[in-house]
Image (cartoon, rainbow, N blue to C red):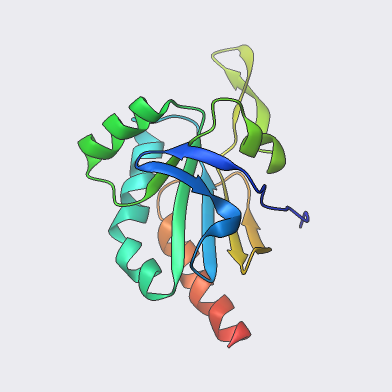
Length: 154
């Protein structure tokens, strides 16, 4: 597992700005996804939103990140009735820190895009990471693992 440090920097979100080093919960889940309003990304965002009250009850904030604009995130949030924050990382600052930009093969062409990935932090320290995530069922898996991690740190 890499030693990823959260950047002390402000990022634009669906509802304003956020600095991941100043989250007021003990636990933070940062998940990266390729694009708003695509099938897998919609499943993932809706699943995290549906479980958001359970994450909040565990003193955990969930934040999604993609390279889409804030406007695209706001449209996505409104259309899907999302309850989680989405960060616009157009400059790929977070994508670089978390090393999620990977070469992909799209219809025979090589392109660079976000590899679906999720990271769990406890008090600013990375405690678990998931790479090459499949969207369906992932939010439930993260919630299960979070409960186990919290049991281990209690």
